[in-house]
Each structure stands twice: as structure tokens, then as C-alpha cells.
Amino acid sequence: MRTRLILVCLLLLQACSGTGTLFSTVGSGDYNPLTLPTVDAEKYKKDKQECINKVQTQIDHNMNVNYNIMKFRECLIQKGYVLLS
Image 1: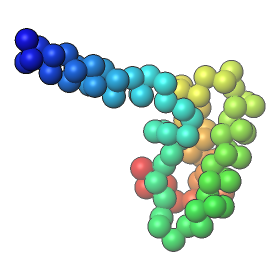
Image 2: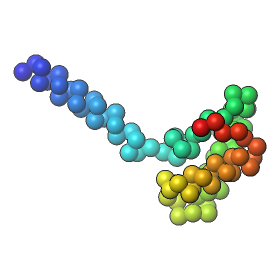
Image 3: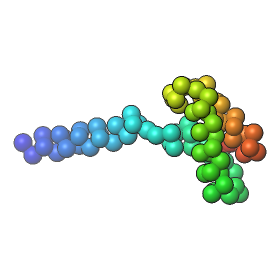
Image 4: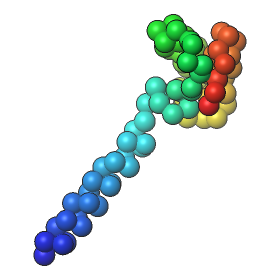
């Protein structure tokens, strides 16, 4: 009985940890590329948000489409950033 309870608890914990990817925000994953460590973090954060807003105004707000991710990354590159990921 105790083994089953532990197993159920482990399964529930694993299920909860996996749902984070289903509800991921624009601030993670494809929209959080790595750049050089010498970059000013505050300016980079501001520029990322500007690029996200720019892409959102040009598309149908489905930010998970590869084309939109490419447009976002292109915006950052045009601002002079070197993307490492």
C-alpha cells in the first residue's frame, strides 16, 4: 500500500512538472536566445520586448509559428546582437 502511494505521488509530481511546457510564455524558449555575456542585460531585455511587440503587430499573434520566431530573431540581429542559441 505504501509503495503505491509513493508511486502515485511520483507520477503526480512528474505530470505537474511537464505541464509547464504546455503553458510556456513568450519570454521563454525560442524567445529567450542566448547572447554574448558582454551585452548590457537591461538593454537586451528592453530590445527583446521591442522585437516581440514588433513581430506581434505584424502577425496573427500565434507566436509559436517558426516564421514568427525567425522574424523575432532577425529583429534582434538587426539591432546588432550576436545570438548564440
